[in-house]
Image 1: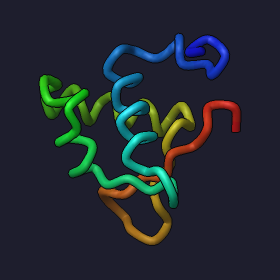
Image 2: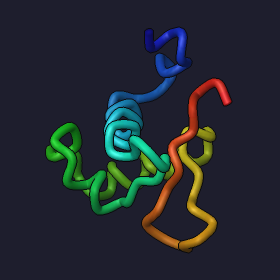
Image 3: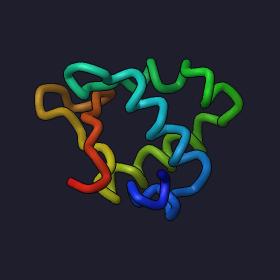
Length: 81
């Protein structure tokens, strides 16, 4: 399934952030940084590693920053879009 979605090229931390974001953003596809940091998949990840991986996911197009807020809010994008 990961290969089909194009997730095999992500690091383990990037993949965990994407999975957590997908889980937390069910209806409106929005997720807050605070919610991600507190997610069980990411509880052992250091803050610097978390933010590096988050930035990488934005650069790769898996997440985009919300246009309504300048910080702390992201939209989850499907890997194929």
